[in-house]
Amino acid sequence: MTDFSGLELIEPLRRALSAEGYTAPTPIQAQSIPHLLGARDLLGVAQTGTGKTAAFVLPMLQNLTASSKGRAAPGRPRALILAPTRELAVQIGDSVQAYGKFLKINATTIFGGAPIGKQIRALNSGVDIVIATPGRLMDLLNQKKLRLDEVSIFVLDEGDRMLDMGFIPDVRRIANLIAARCQTVLFSATMPEAIAKLAQGLLNDPVRVDVAPQSTTAERIHQRVLFVDKPKKRALLSSLLKDESISRALVFSRTKHGADKIARHLEQDNVRTGVIHGNKAQNARQKALNSFKTGQVRILVATDIAARGIDVDGITHVINFDLPQDPETYVHRIGRTARAGEAGQAISFCDHEERDFLYDIEKVTRKTVPVDADHPFHAADIAAAGPSMGKSRSANPGNKSRRGGNGGGGRNFGGGKPQHPSKASKGYKPRGHKGKSQGNRGGSSRAA
Ligand code: AMP
Image 1 (spheres, helix red, strand yellow):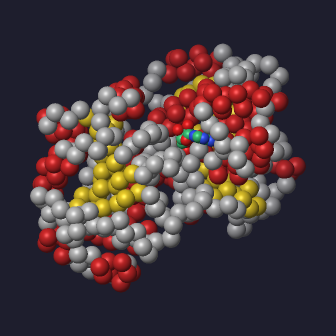
Image 2 (image 1 turned 90 degrees about the vertical axis):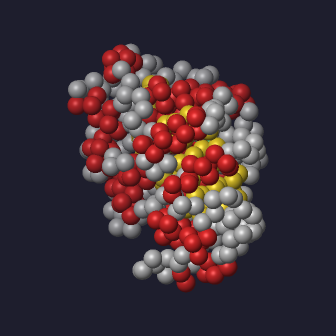
Image 3 (image 1 turned 120 degrees about the vertical axis):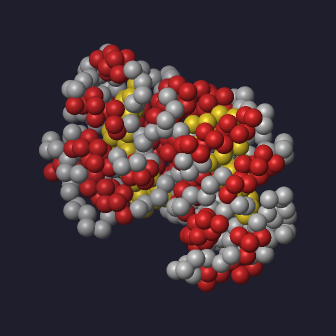
């Protein structure tokens, strides 16, 4: 498929897509939209950056337009999109506005940390689409400010992150309030057991669309690791940032406190820096994000949860100031660069305590991260150290060649499978699926 004409989207949507400058659907869009227009349930395995938002928002707008009987009843939305973070909810809200600007569908965004009164007034005025984070939505449901019995399309975005953030019980409670016959869509970047189980309970004979093979890192991201003693990490960061080709960098810190410290240090160095994490007020986070998007600040320091769903084009570098414990998080982080076909760099600092994290990352991604020893803080002892007890070096064949000292480590990504979006879109029946028909779900409440 080369353009949107094969997707049977209505004219106001096609017009909006052209206004956005989109000329062709992304693979997730080409594979999902026809099924979603046909009201199928869908399980999508795709990361942020693949165009997944349009994949579910476009058919939602079209189907709601087709079934519209005028304004939605007060406090009774017709579609619900759940997102794990405020940032992602805001971004989805922006996409709904952009794609729906020539339609008479209205939407509101609901998340914690913002005045609840305004959100209640918006709901009371009657909205078709609610985009919400689970916590605030539960508050409003408990206060009986909205009902979900009119919801005919339910989307759960970034299921794996919902899991990481402990939202699954809330998600199940919310799903139980939605009529079982409604169209349900679940997107997740990875498919841990708990999400597969959730999908099995929520989705009825879903189509599965998979464009993100689990745990393989994008070929066009140039990765390297710099071994450094922990106390020297900040000095190493300052020295790296003298390189002006690092024009827009996202720096990851494991902790909120650490993120603040890094940002303060860079500001002292006269590097304009924004910082976002869960302790920052919503408007401060949004302001930092906007300054980063517009290029007013070159560096954004973030924790994993706060960075989730950030959609900023042109990130030239992702810098892992701290290596994450979980290889999937590493894959997510570095996926923030090299978007839209561009190349990107992922630079990871690794101290003594993080050696094992690096081994785990290499094992899961099936790639050796090239070592860059060409910096003033190179710690040869860390480079030479083996994995701790219980870690098997042989699990990662590429490690035999780890030497360092090659000033960037060469762009050698051999050994790993390249990331090719899967062309297949196949009917998916999860294990143990009860095979409920559309008919027998009607009217009853959902067993999640
Ligand atoms: P998402 O994965 O939904 O966060 O989208 C990632 C980025 O791709 C966003 O900046 C979208 O505006 C952009 N995008 C989505 N679909 C298309 C498309 N068909 N053509 C060009 N850009 C797109």
